[in-house]
Image (cartoon, rainbow, N blue to C red):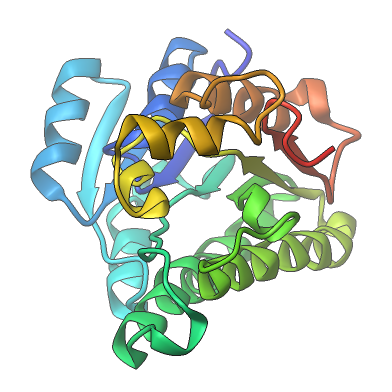
Length: 247
């Protein structure tokens, strides 16, 4: 029960890595807000987990939607933990071929959302004098794969933003860290690979020394540590949970 008595908001919490984090946080004693664009999936997960979880529909790329989330959960007070997990990718392709609208959407969800949640939730954390923010970045921001340039760049931004936020917010008692997942068994895996075939999987796995894809549970374990009081001296870290890929 390492998160007993804490409240957490997890964006993109209805599926994939986000759902893994939500489940683990609840198991560790937290009250969790599942903030997701897919309202039905968020509600279904909240119903599964019981009174410790509640669902809210939000578009993390839209300022008004994020502000509405902050108002809706205001009765809980400032969150102890904010997990910026929502993210999207794009199909592998030459960097000059990605449509502008898709480029803008990748930046909006992966980059702008962190600014928007910070604008809504950091003031309350500052007023209380404590908080933990966890941004889900990627090994793509450390060791980029070809033909995913704009996704890689967005995750590199997340890592830099994490470190800058950590330095600025430390005097306010707010810790900011990131996780860099390797390719994981989530709905986004097929997007990153371009196609999900045994041959493509074998090529991806050949780049991971431990020889397997990550799982949402792997990320959730790391998230619990970084957001718990056990990591009270840890800030500005971008932890690679990658089976050795970035070595």
